Image (cartoon, rainbow, N blue to C red):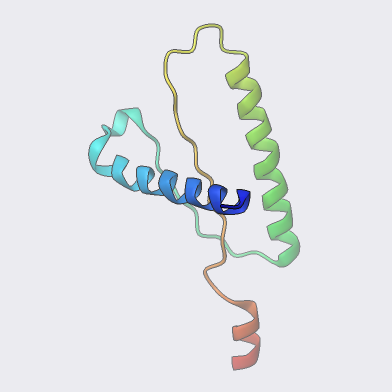
Length: 91
């Protein structure tokens, strides 16, 4: 099994756990949110860079914890809901 397949499977499992948390984890113990945005290719690049920086910031916060007492999972998903190629072909 290749590393990319392991990573893809990990993301699938964690996404499933996020879905299950809607029914299994009290709202006070979780934070599920979503945004649907419009953007350009350049804007998407900026969004992805900001997400990378934010993940690094969260790692720093976690590493600075003096007495961590729980493990939490944060998932970030960013994917197109439309296809630019299809839209251009249909116009």
